[in-house]
Amino acid sequence: RVGGDEFWVVGYGYDKFKMDEYIARLKANLEEFDSLEAKPYRVEVSYGVVLTDPCSGITLEEYINIVDTRMYRNKRDRKKKKKNFEE
Image (tube, rainbow, N blue to C red; front, side, top):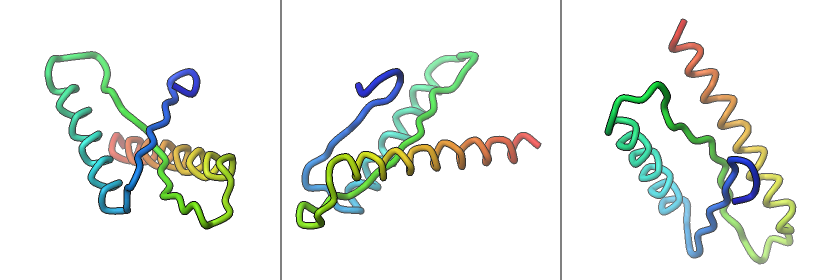
């Protein structure tokens, strides 16, 4: 847990395919959880991902900034889709 409702998941040995599989499983598990019983809310997640390269010279702080930016972009896009769907 990073703080508040933010968490980091770090995977070792992931490539783009494996990362996409992980995200798909996460989304499927959340959808299954939401369908288990009637709730006045849905559990949703905004995420940002980055594949690292130890030879890139990019620092941990820079990677964190990249992921954070992508997470907020994902959150904004998800809200935009939800708003367009409701209109």
